[in-house]
Length: 435
Image (cartoon, rainbow, N blue to C red; front, top):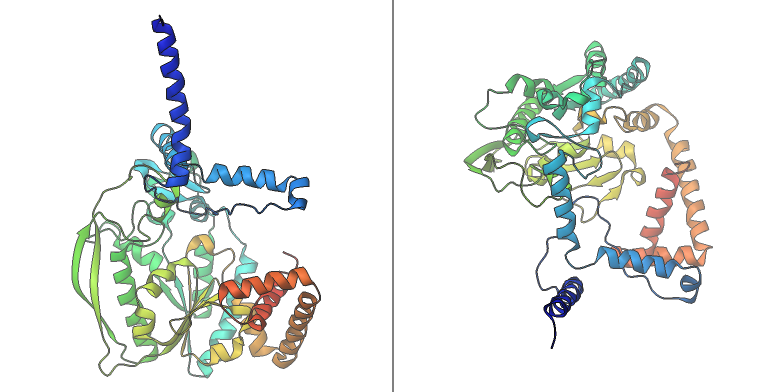
C-alpha cells in the first residue's frame, strides 16, 4: 500500500512536469494571445543549420538565444519582472528611463539638458548659429523663409518631479545659449518650450503627459495652430484653417502619450488621468499651400502623422534627423545624403528646423554644414567627388559575391530594383565612414 508520502511525491513530480510543459505548449500552440514587448526589441530568427555554424558553435548559441526569446509566456514573465522592479524599488527596466516623483517618467538625457550637463560650449553653438544665419540670409534673398523651432523639454516642464538624487545646480544650458545667439543675429525663432512653460497649470487639459516624452495631443493642437499662424505672418499668406470639430477625454491613450511607459513593458498602467483628444477638419478654401521641408527630431512625427503635412502644405518633406526623408508623395523613405540638397532647398518656400533641448548637442545634424557647402562652396566639384566615391563603393560591392548577394536579398525584401539598393547601400557606407 502506498504511503501518503509517496502519493505527495508523485503529485509534486507530475506538477513539475506540467509546469515545464505549459511554456512549451504555449510556444508551439499559442494557446493564449500574448502582447509583444514594446521598445527596442529585436525579434530573432531561428538560425539555419550548416556545417560551418555547427563546428564554430554559432548554431548552438544562436538556437539557445532564439529558444530563450520565444519561450512560451516569456513576454508575460518579462512584464512581471519589470512590474516588480517598478512597484517595489521605483526602478525602470528600460535604458535611460528615470522614474521621478509621483511616478512621472523622464528620459535621462532630458534631465542632463535641463541642468546643462551636456553643454556643447559657446564657440561651437556660435559657429552653428552663424552658419544658419548665412543660410537664412541666402534663402531670404530668394524669397524663402528659414524658421527654427524649439520643442519643449520634459525635464524643464516637469522639473518639480525630478528625483532628489538627480537634482543639482543649474549650469549654462545649450537651450539658453542657442536662444541667445540666435536672437543676436536675428533668426526667425518659434519657441514652444518657453510658451509651454508660460501655459503650465493654466490650460484646461494637460499639454504634457505624465508617462510620455512628447507633447500631448491637446498640446499638439495648440502647436499646430500657433505654427500655421506664425508661417502666415512670416510669408504674408493665408494658409488652410485648422479647425477643431470635437474634443473628448479618454484614458485609452493614443501614441505617443505614454511612449516611455510602453517601453517599460509593465503589467499594469501607471496613469489613468484622462487626456484630451480631438477631431478636426482642414478648410482649404482659397488658401495658399507653401512648399516646406522640416528637419527635425521625433517631435515632428505627431504633426506629420496627423495629416497636416499633406493637407496644409504642398510637396512637404520631413527630414528625420537630417538622415531619412519622409513624404506623403513617397512610398518609402529616402536617404537624405542621396538627394541633391541644393535642389531640395530651392524647391521649397519654407525650411523649418525643429528640436527639443535633449537633442541640441547634435543640432542641426550637419544641415548647416551641408547647406553652407551647396550654397557657398564649389557645388559641382563637391557633388562630382561624392558621386565618384559612391561609384567606388558600388564597384566594391559588385566585386564581392557574398556582399552582392546580401544586397540582392535586401532589394527583394524592400521590393526595389537592385541598382537602387546598390546605390542606397553605397551612400550609407560613404556617410558612415570612420563611425
